[in-house]
Image (cartoon, rainbow over all chains, first blue to last red):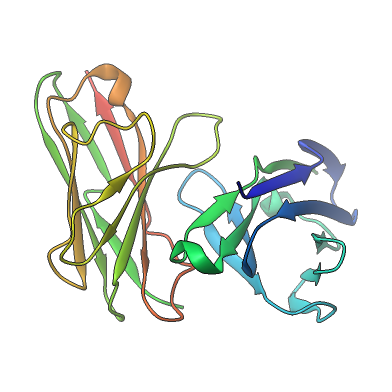
Length: 112
Length: 114
C-alpha cells in the first residue's frame, strides 16, 4: 500500500522566516510527487516532481526530490502571512491510473 | 494550468433531498475522474474513481448507491448525493485526469445538509 508521511504536522513561524516542509513516501511504482497548498478551498497545485535532484522553483517556493531516499522537501523563504495554509504532498502511482496518495499535510501559520 | 470547474460551489439543502455536483474539465479530456471529500480539519479522502463510459470504482466505506457518479463524457462528470443527511455535509472536490493533465483539482463544492 502506498504511503506518504509529512512532517512537521504543524509549524508556527514569523514573517521573514524560512521554512522547510518534509515529505517521505513509499510507493510501488513511482510516477511523480506533487505539492499542493490548501487554504479554505480546494488544493492549489504548486509543483510536480519526477526526477531526483532537480530543483523546481516558483518565486519564494522551491522543491526538490530524492528518489533514492524517498523524500521531498518544500522550502519557503521570506515567509509572508499569505503563506499560511496546509501544504499537502502526494505521490502518483504509475500503475494506479493517476491515483494520488496524500500525506496528512503540514499546517503552516505565519505570524506578522 | 488546466481549467477545472465545479458547480455549484456552495449548496445548502434539507435532509432527504438529493444534490447533484458537476465537474467539468474545460480544456482537456478527462478519461478518469477522481472524487474526494474533505471534512473539517481532515485531509482529502478519495471516494471513487471513474473512467469515462464505465462504472465508478468506490473506496471502502463509500456507499455506491448513495453517491452516484456519472462520467458519460470526457469533459463532464457528476456526483449525486442521494437522500442527503447532515453527516454528508462536507467539501466535495473533483480531480479530472487525462494524459499529462492529472494534477489539477476543481474548486470544490461545499455541501451543508440541514
